[in-house]
Amino acid sequence: MRPVAVIVGRVFALTDSVPKMNQPSAPTAHSVRQALVLSGGGARAAYQVGCLRHIAKAIPEYRPKILTGVSAGAINAVHLAAYRGDWSEAVERLRGLWLGLDTNKVYHTDFRHVSMRVLHWGLRLLSGGRFGRGDVRGMVDTSPLEHFLRTHLIEQDGRVVGIDENLQEAVIDAVAIITTNYASGRSEAWVQSVNEDLWQKGQLTSNSAALTVPHVLASAALPMFFPAISLGGQWHGDGGIRLSAPLSPAMHLGAERILAVSPRAADGAHTHSGTEPYPSPAQIAGVLLNSVFLDLLDFDALQMQRINELLEQIAPAQWDGFRPVEVMVLRPQEDLGELARAHELGLPKAFRFFGQGLENKREPSADALSMVMFEPEYLSLLMTLGEQDTAARSEEIRDFLLAPRKGDSHD
Image (cartoon, rainbow, N blue to C red):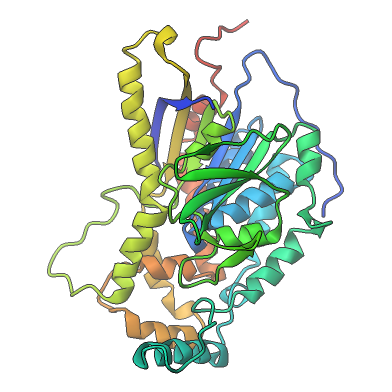
């Protein structure tokens, strides 16, 4: 059984269509405002579902009040926030959604669609912009993903059904989806909550919004690969591009305890010996995508732990607007890029044909490929790994999630 890497610490933050009805548990004297932070990673977000599935089975008392999602994690966050049923059912339905995916339901992979986009991009590059269409948006056409999401995230009056109802019944307190505004270059949090606690600080601003499928599509729009989405007249893409502090949206929304799930393998999970081939464009792209979407969560948690170590030396009266927040980060021990390489033959032929021109088969890992490989066998494997890794530390996770607030005493 593989152990799951966990970062745990007390950190300090600025205080700034299923008909079944929910029956939220009554708050207790020791209840803590729990937040679930779901990062990006494209297809790798299936790993998060496996982690949540084990937690839902082993710790049925757990249900986060605050959910934030970035990139593909936005799909998971909105589904969980909108589901009109108990938490275990919400996670099972989410698992079914991922099992129902394949690459053709995310973007067009037939030879005509792929070749035409490659041709347009190639002509513009080789001709200095004189030939080829100038309005080709993204390397692939993601209209299948929009259709898939609109089928599973039912909209009514321009908003995803279920979120408002869960907010009014106090099942959840808030849900936030993060995008990147390409005009301003800043991260934007689209927040749906009962209190509408918004903020305008640093590189991350917030907007009150009734969340829709376009918000999810925008957050999940991998740069260059997936087309940007227009929100309020401005073009938005993947929320992880400029989000330097992935935990900050949950903290701004009042989280006291945060469980974050990242599909980025722990350091040391992949060690290679011998002479490495010269890195291909695909390998370089994979490193860039990891640094943009996944590594920042590690940095954010590490920085907050360092702040914790400093502020623990200061009396609470001198915290000056800071407050303690407990954080746990779960992640796989195996390199999900290496697993993607083993399942590469499952990709549609046209997509695989053009992709071979950007990669080197001698490279053991395929990080970029792992983010766009939505094949059922690969997604199922990721969810299984998530369950197994989380089960390996189940008791530690239970202790973290169910512990009373620091300073509270048991009755």
